[in-house]
Amino acid sequence: MAALHLLHPPHILSGHGPPPLLRLHRKPSPLLHLLPRAAVAATGASAAVTTTPSDAALQNFRRWLATHGADTGAAAPAAVPEGLGLVAARGLPRGEVVAEVPKKLWMDADAVAASDIGRVCAGAGDLRPWVSVSLLILREAARGGDSLWAPYLAILPRQTDSTIFWSEQELLEIQGTQLLSTTMGVKEYVQSEFDNVEAQIIAPNKDLFPGTITCDDFLWAFGVLRSRVFPELRGDKLALIPFADLINHSDDITSKEPCWEIKGKGFLGRDVVFSLRTPLEFKSGEQVYVQYDLDKSNAELALDYGFTEWNSSRDSYTLTLEISESDPFYGDKLDIAELNGMGETAYFDIVLGESLPPQMIPYLRLLCLGGTDAFLLEALFRNKVWEHLELPVSRDNEESICQVIQKACKSALAAYHTTIEEDEELLEREDLQSRHLIAIDVRIGEKKVLQQINDIFKEREQELDDLEYYQERRLKDLGFLGDNGEIIFWES
Ligand SMILES: C[S@@+](CC[C@H](N)C(=O)[O-])C[C@H]1O[C@@H](n2cnc3c(N)ncnc32)[C@H](O)[C@@H]1O
Image (cartoon, rainbow, N blue to C red; front, top):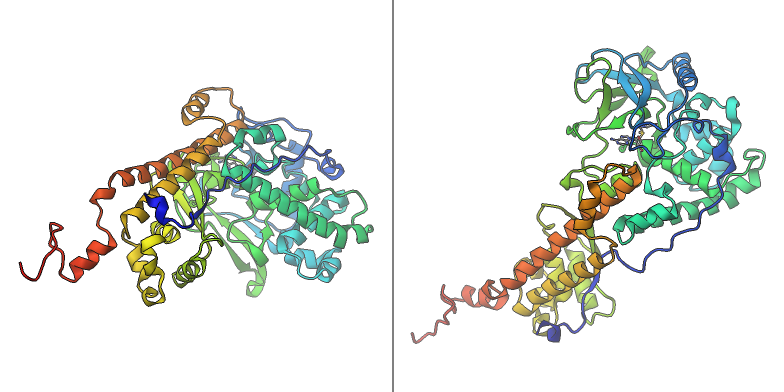
């Protein structure tokens, strides 16, 4: 029995620790009430919170862009099923410029430095770029009509369907999912960053932040950045680009080529602009789309943008494996993991319909190594051990990896409040709200991946007798074992 050799069971974390606590509703924030994109109608049957600004606000926004030298003639902002979007004003071939937005309109680190909060942000030391740009958004929103960005801030949505904006009741729909843990983790992170900036920047500078700024306001600014910043503009380059950020996502766009560039224009190319291009041809009147990120899972799309796709390559589950500190071979195992570019904890993203990540099984075999196989952990084997772990080590070790994974999958599956079949039935309903649909898509995807992992190891467990293990390979290498598994003696 494998367990006899497992002196210390490996630590398998599946992302299903104690269920995260759901926060109570907080009061609506004063600042969000100041933001204009509120008195509007929902668009499209599936849009629970997607609202569009008034025509007057849109016209004001377009005038503002033109006054400040933005070139946006190729597409017009308009109400579309995804909220606002960009609609081709004429036939646009592939690679055509949709808009060129001058740097003076971007909300980025330079805009923070040049603004009246620049001094306090610089004085606060190492503020993360997203934190200082969030403060700029909130400061400018509080300035109302006096802000340079007022016409832009007026058309920003008050919410998206990102799970960071879901109510306690709505979050119950993703009970047991990794998405719930991630969402709660992100909200806690934003809360702790807010606590810091409130103490360091907001409270001591009441002249700059005269009204009340709450954590909900800060979460809104975080959500705006998370859903609207082009993926490559992260870190120090983080920038909110008005107008270009109205472009919606379509799964039909599969090209990996970036659809934008930052370039110089005008005399000696001194005027920096953000230039957005079409990834495909679009007819006049069609909505122009881009691909946000081909590699994001449905859970990531739900968290960042508030939508999911019915596409199995977006269904994924992150398996977390960890070398337990109480393992008697902890030091040796950690050393081996580190020598092979891994660590005490390893994360494996498993995608529906795709094979397991290549490092996962060797890492698992390492975690389960013990008993009579522990000799492989000796220093003598250090440079070769990973090669050995790439193939089955022993029946006991292989059986252990099959059992621990199946156990972890079963326990993770038990934490969901619905089965795959129940979810599939729910998907037949036509009255599903967008957030409910996102919840079903994510939990069904996670469960399918868990089921797939479970099946792989179940099948493997049934093949244990047919596998070739370390000792047999070794005897063969030394010429002691024939092709049919018979021991070759010198005398025969
Ligand atoms: C970069 S903004 C695009 C402009 C946005 N539609 C608006 O009204 O301001 C990204 C947000 O648009 C919406 N969105 C974009 N593509 C979508 C899609 N394919 N399905 C549903 N919502 C989408 C989501 O709310 C997402 O968070």
